[in-house]
Image (cartoon, rainbow, N blue to C red; front, side):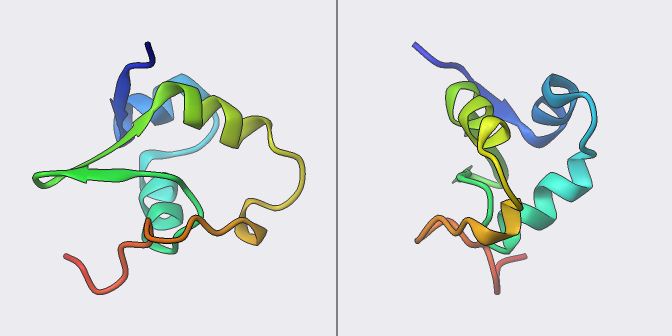
Amino acid sequence: MSRFLNMQEASDHLRNISAETLRRLARDGHLPVRRIGRRLVISERLLDEWADTPGDVRDTVYPGTGLRGES
């Protein structure tokens, strides 16, 4: 079973992408995150799959995951 990571934990897991960059990618719908209360989380399995996907991550859109308009 995959565990859920917050954006700082995801950043630490990836080692080369800042938590702020991950938040921006999530806001724009390019990272498959979920909101639990006020926290953004991503499954470790999905994060690894996302990181292993070739090409520009901005070409990938996850419907329903964009956080535009939310504070």
